[in-house]
Image 1 (cartoon, rainbow, N blue to C red):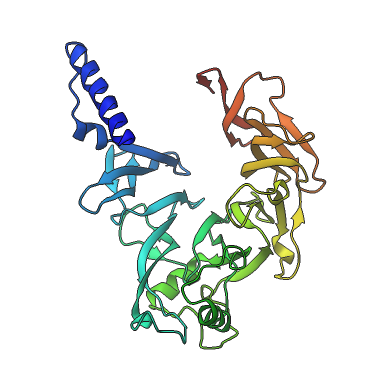
Image 2: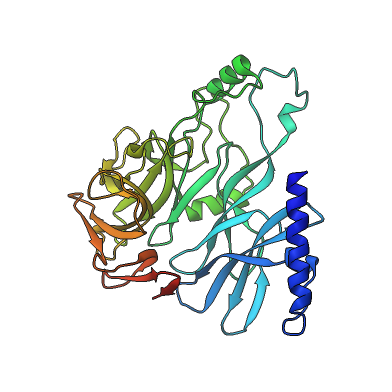
Length: 374
């Protein structure tokens, strides 16, 4: 009742202000207010002549807030809707501009290996919504699903030559592991035991497209000991933590990734660190190299153009000493020695966004008070 009264009061105040200022401002209805379209991201193509826009808007018929991909071209000044399902996010152009990769949650039939069928007679033919990696041409057409399996894709990046994609999922289980877990726990979800770290895979784009066009829908073979992974993918690294962000160095030799807690909660500061993998010598059982050792929550990692330093931002915690919350700061770390250096240390405000430039510099947005400038 208190919440309803508060909403009613806010509504009355809103209408009163609107009526009082009706002569100066255009009228707005409640439908107009709730039917706004937000831009979650705008990603520029490598040639600078097109952008992919992620829109977020209410869909009253489906009772969801839908996110779609739109393409705007400079030469035609046209806006084209690329996707229609309403569950797309994180679009990334391939470096050659030929493809747009993105993550989407779409209903796809999955074969569930389980001997327990007390609550689900049609368990073998059910549909799941899983976040997978898709490709779509900027010229339009149907999106191509590249990844398979029951685990969500939550981070990915392109190789510099556009020939491969690197992506992270929770460590896939084998058929035997899934059957044992479902048989023992049924519909009970364990709070800690079921949580596990991530695996980073690489997948050749051409191979993935061929497999899709051949309609190779098998997730794995029938072996009890075969992990549920995307056919044709290769394990690059494993970590006991969840991968939050991935980036490949411009020379294509190293992969950097940022970790967080497997529970996606801020519990231990040691779980938030930056690691690198030598792609030429990557082995599943070879531990990644830990670059940072600090009491900060790093975010948004990007390689500098020298392929040696890794830029990262910090909003919570401290790189220099004990945990201390400060304004957004920008650093880079030497990928070999781990030595970190703060950029813009004499700047009095925060640095919420940045982008590496071609000369191993950076273009940053700085904020002092409420003003944001480049």
